[in-house]
Length: 52
Image (cartoon, rainbow, N blue to C red; front, side):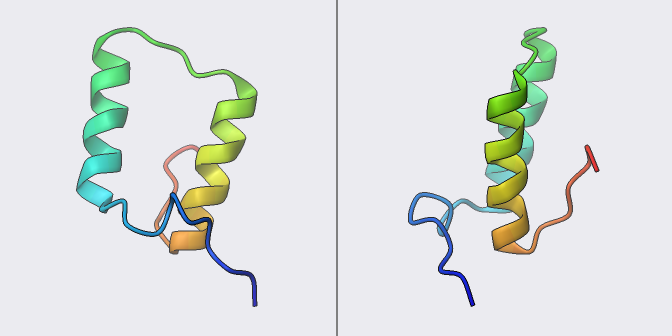
């Protein structure tokens, strides 16, 4: 079983959601590399991924 990324371990879902909302509100479009990193972190945390 893979070890979760050390930076991904303690990010609460509410914080991820807040960051997503903030980026949308500012009109920031994440690039593919960042999206993949976020998807991977969400998958390792077992959180649902809206973009899937």
